Image (cartoon, rainbow, N blue to C red; front, side, top):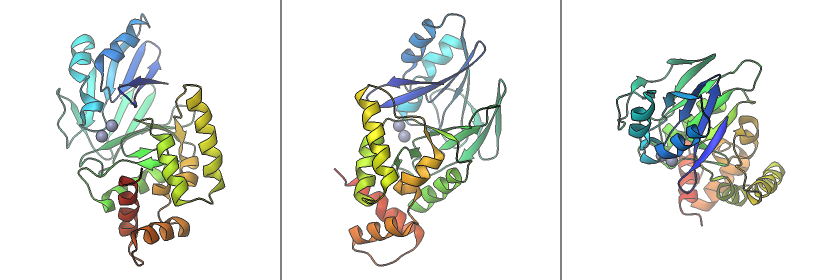
Amino acid sequence: MTPLPAFADNYIWLLQHQQQVLVVDPGDGQAVLQWLTGEPGLQLDTILVTHHHADHSAGLPDLVQATGARVIGPALEKLPVPHTPVGDGDNVRWGPLNWQVIDVPGHTAGHVAYWAEPEGQAPLLFCGDTLFSGGCGRLFEGTAAQMLASLDRLAALPANTRVCCAHEYTLSNLRFARTVEPDNSALAAYEQACMNLRQQGQATLPSNLGLELAINPFLRSRSPAVRAAALRHAGAAASSDAEVFARLREWKNGFQ
Ligand SMILES: [Zn+2]
Ligand SMILES: [Zn+2]
């Protein structure tokens, strides 16, 4: 599994099984074609798309034209090429893997995630711009209640799931997370480890779900410390879980 860097901070994830290659969210088709040129004999045959934003889908026409790969994407969203529409509960077979589709609206209205369990390995999650390491996507088309419910779905997956996010936002997310939860020692240790990785020019991803449950404020918005911090910052009284989550997301939007 390879995170191929694209644009300023995107990752296009590539998976290989025998001679077959699967890519996720190819915002830049040329970057993928260039990678394939360096891997003679491999054939791109499947493209998974999590949502319609251009940094995840603009490479589709080039890739389909060059390789004829099939494109799987959200049923509720338009992509620049025809695609096989999938939604909650659908399965996508690729080599030995059976991808389960999970609807995760919030960042966009039809955003989907893909989860599979390779034999003898930790499960894999491609979650696009829904869950980031230490953070979550902005609410462009959905509500805080929808995003909270979507993150709850992802949080219920096995804790050893490898979380393949679509952006390298980890360090800036962790600065915010430390502001929310200054006493979280797991968070401090993780931030140091991620700073070391970035200094060596390495990706901080994939993360894993068990770690995210310990450090990501958007997966911890019901914990007393995160809840109290969000309400304190907003100057708000106790409110519903979705309202607390909304205050936390707004706080992050304005965080420098
Ligand atoms: Zn997006
Ligand atoms: Zn994106």
